[in-house]
Amino acid sequence: MTHEEELELRKRIVEEALSWKNTGYHDHAGIKNVGVDCAHLPLRVYQAVGVIPADYQTPHYHPQQWLKKDVADTAFMDELVKYAIEITEAEVQPGDLILYKFVNSWTHGAVVIEWPNYLLHAVVNRGVIGSCADEGFLLRRQRRFFSFLVK
Image (cartoon, rainbow, N blue to C red; front, side, top):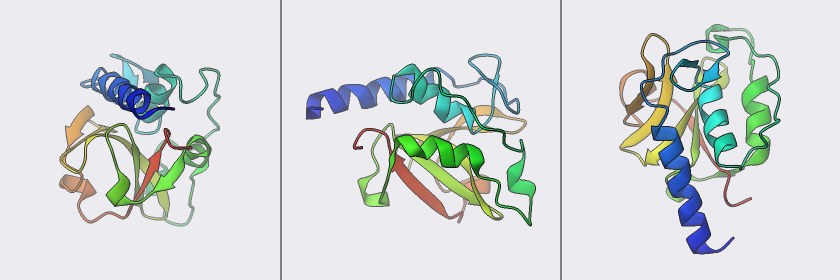
């Protein structure tokens, strides 16, 4: 992929992510303008631009796995990141994926719009919103970064 092609794909990822803004939150859902959770939002964005196969089937995951204090239920996110490579925070660009750690699991996914000032993620009782990487419940959370474009 040329640099220009990568920039265009990143632009398409950001545009697709932003098109989900204000979609309501619903566990195990991934339907734009209807309902989505924090795992399906990045999945649907990356599927829409073709970096994850459209026929990808999600493994079962507990809808609120971050609440499980004695279990690291990461089945869905573990599968999702098979299509990406882990990168450093210094390498993060628009269109990349961030995973935040809650209790024992890397379970909250967000799409980078402009690092670190703006990312898009699905939040219980709020739906798909834009946030700063370190505000609210994301403050001081451990995080990992992935790119679907440099694999």
